[in-house]
Image 1 (tube, rainbow, N blue to C red):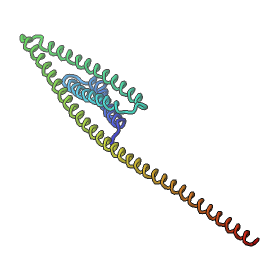
Image 2: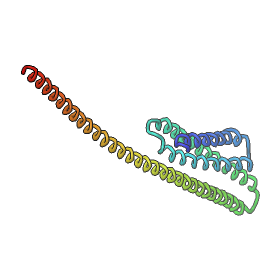
Image 3: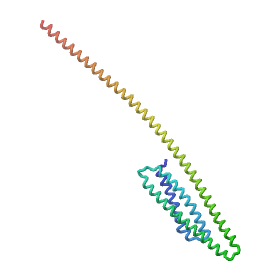
Image 4: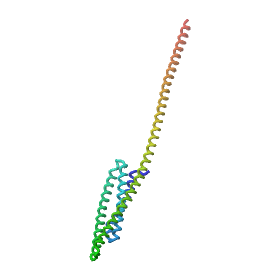
Length: 227
């Protein structure tokens, strides 16, 4: 069964892979792209940042089960992961805002001679609203997935606790049996000691009787021999 520190390492490895992908898209791909291609890259960045946020939540759960003796090093890794995530969230937000400004500026320039500027503004608002709805739906999906994963993790923990409880109960039963066996053995040894003392008293009595008999025999032999 996986231990909390092993699970932490696995989740942290997934996080590093995601944050590396985000870094590459923000610092390289998005800087070389324009228009819809750049917007698509930033949407993928938002998805990956949401996934990284979910992994951070999992890391916060797993770190609670890590022994206190080694927890500080994992705490430092978690703090650094949070700092990196916040930094790239800010970077992504700035990049997205810059893309929106560029799009609006380009749209305004291309439509400057159009008598229907109001319609163009409505189109821009609709696009922005659609993007907001898409982001909200994506976050709801990620939250639902995280809730399901947390539920599965909770079920695993409950099963693990149930197994540990059964092991403790079995150990307690074994200890009770061992204690009973020790009590019986102690009683047997005490009986043997008492029997040994009885045998010593019997042997001492026999020896004493033999000594008395020998003394009497010697006495009678000497007494009758003189007469």
